[in-house]
Image (cartoon, rainbow, N blue to C red; front, side, top):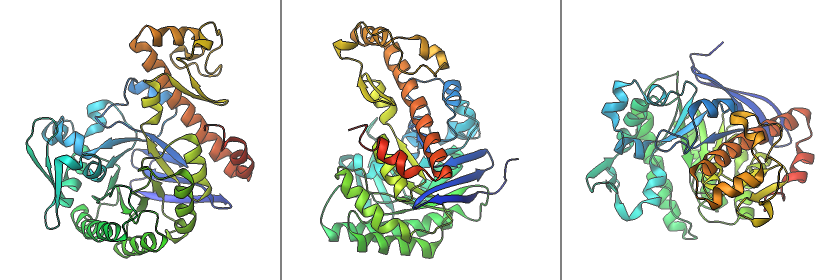
Length: 371
């Protein structure tokens, strides 16, 4: 039975690795969970029904991009993104904070207002304040809403990182006020602080004072070494509330996910499965496979015997190799679908091993598989 109130249940732990359930009005999300990225309201190259068949329980949309296209007037007419893209399960939306960094040449920060963008599409002025970000996410009808934050580029400059914490904390308070008392949706705060333990803890403590339904680690997966990311997670995730979900934004490879689960992270998102699919790279239980490689030209085996979605288990590596070399769009579609299927299969195995108390063995087996 679906819950009308957003909630999180921590079921069990295997050392730091956590098994849980996020309950929303549109469905339950088993954690650790991976969210395919639908920036523009679509998982690139994959039909919505096929995403469902991969047992995906939640997807991610992007506030900034959906504000530009199709715009909130259109989304309001459809009562949100779910109806617009024919997706009935939960949606989490990024707040636009990442675009403040990734599109930095198109925006500037005004502490009193927010982020002021020059649209990369048509040059129009776009003001994305904390209040506006929440309003847009409400028009999207997101089930999990992220606060607007300043996500700095990779830096060792503590003054820059401290400033981002101050800006993000101020914006988080404004987002909480604009969000109001809506118990059916989740509002997540985003911790900054780069790779500095003291700054991360400071950011987390300030967010806890405001009180959110969940907490995210931002400002990682921005170019730092994987071990540095794991180290800061190891040092700081314990400061996050135990009985609320923990989200590592923009991560990542299967190894990234394994390492972060080991440190107590519950939620992940990344464009990698579909982006890799568009370049001929597949993720499998034996590691990464570059299907462009000529050694697959006569390989009759499928990527995964068990996957019958769109008859994926009937397409040989040889055929996929041929499609790639022929520049056929079907190659991207089939490999992207396979990769999402694999990621969700991978998450189910992670959850099973946490439940069984065998996560450490699973981790050791696969942590170096995807180098």
